[in-house]
Length: 41
Image (cartoon, rainbow, N blue to C red; front, side):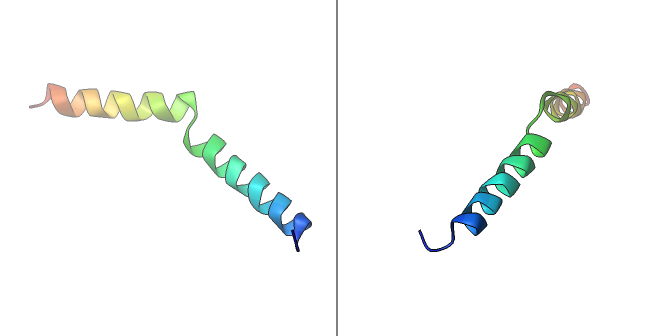
C-alpha cells in the first residue's frame, strides 16, 4: 500500500458517515415517516 495514512483516514471517515446515517434514531425516524405515509393512503 503506497499511502497507508490516507487509507486509514478514508476508512475512518467512511465508518463515521455510516455510523451517523445508519443509527437507531435515524432508522426509527425513517420508519415512522413511512408508517405515517402508509397510514394516509
